[in-house]
Length: 258
Image (cartoon, rainbow, N blue to C red; front, side):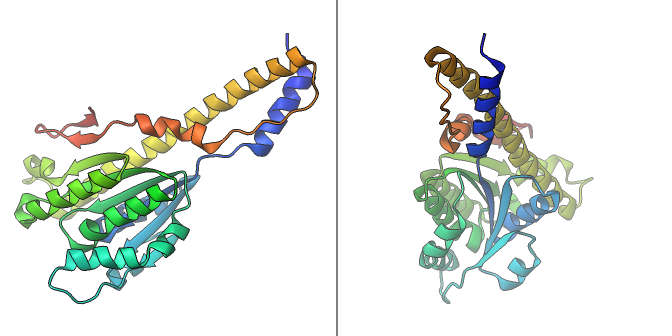
């Protein structure tokens, strides 16, 4: 049996040095900004929200802990301009994205989301974060499918995991669901995904903590040592993020892990 005094000592050391995973959710562009605003209003513990946009008015409207304004040059290709603007601000982004896990949420098909989101994702990954990109595909009536598909491939090339939410899955509700309400449904879906992952990681952290208590306490008993030097490291805690499967609406409108 492990002496109670030793267990108390181990628990105190664990909580003194333990590091919760730091999580950032970055909304790029208008659609991403809407999602981040919804998360910001929920005040999720341990989650930092960041809004990135090329549109000053859109950035002003977004609710977020941090905001980054990109200033693209005038160009015939606004997506390329947004990408270049993000690349020119990589040092700023690197300073903002100092988390263990970074979600990058973007509506695909527009300039900011399509052009800047892959750069934001790459920067976060180079900074050592596990990156999860959430790409929102536009309604077919918007006529941006080809651009959105190209943007999705760019995200896949940069992110560790990609979640796809297709607005067209809401078509069957079109007669009963106004456009703005449909967008709110999409926001709710994305917010639910992020909150689910955060909850999962919190459980993983507690499990890791309990295992450390048991293992280190037994080592103390075996070695008859009163010296405790334990640190629960964030990379161990966030390993579960690698297990997250891509999520997508299928043809029937179902969303789930696959």
